[in-house]
Length: 186
Figure (tube, rainbow, N blue to C red):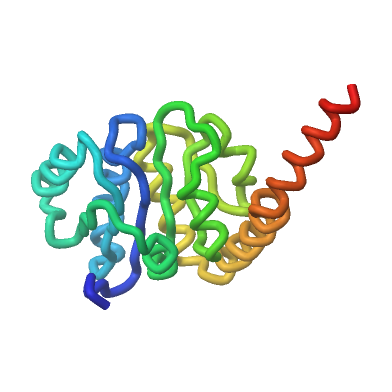
C-alpha cells in the first residue's frame, strides 16, 4: 500500500550493476507502455549503477511509472505484489536467490538464459526464458505472463513446487549432510 502501485506490477530484485540487465528491462518495459499504461516497474535494490538506471528511466519518460525502492528487508511482501518477476541478467549468474525467492512465493518469472538460471527455470514449465540482451524478447515474455494469467499461474505453481523440493533449507541441509557422510566414508 505504501508504494501505491496500480496493476499490473512488473518487478525485479537485484543489485544495480551492469550485469543485471536493468537497461534491457527498462527498454522492454518501455515497449509495453502503450499496451499496459497502468503497469508499474518495481525495481528493488541498490548499487553503484542505481543513479544511472534512474537517469535512463527519466530519459525514456518512464520516471512516473518506475518505482525505485532502494534496499528493502520486506522482499517476500514485495514479491507478492508483483504480477511478473523479471531477472534480465546479461552475463553469467549462479543460482540467483531473488529468482528462487520469487518462485517460492508463487510469482510468475521471466529470466534470461544465462549461467545457472536454466537449471532452475525450465522454459514454459516453471517460467519463461529469453536470450540475454534482447529487450524485445523480454517484452514479449512479460506480455505473455500478463495476458496469459492462467498459464502464468500454472508455471508459478510448478516453480513453487520445484523450489520446495530442490532448494528448501531442509533439502539443502539433507544434501550437505549426505555429502559429509560420503566424504567421511571414503
